[in-house]
Amino acid sequence: MRALRGALLLGGLALLTCGLVGLLTDPYVTGPLGVLLWAAALVVLHDGLWLPLVCALGAAATGRPVLRGWLVVVAAVGAVAVPAVLRAGDDHGNPTLLPLPYLRNWLLFLAVSATAAALTAAVRRARRTGRARRAGRTGRAGRAGR
Image (tube, rainbow, N blue to C red; front, side):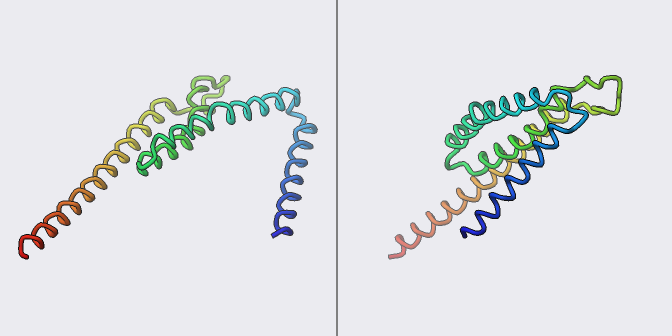
């Protein structure tokens, strides 16, 4: 186990070094300090806002696995979709850069996935209720026959 941890640590450090060297030597990156500040702000935003929000929503959804699953999916898709939604129309003269109606598509995804989650929860509840009714009838019938 110790060797595996050491190998993973060395691999992670090698990737980090490769990324930093690429950042500092890439001719297209004119301000590496700005990129590093952006990355630091991203860490603060993630750990200070996003992570506590996701944890709070997850804790509030305890006992509701369908809602929790939907929240995880929406968070993952949102992490990818929100940047495109915020940059919609900002194509810098290149109409192929962001050619789709991203806000509409994201809202459509939210509606369809929420509907699927609600239907899944309703089916699970109906099955659970049906089993409880069958168990109740069986229990009463068994007692009445005695």
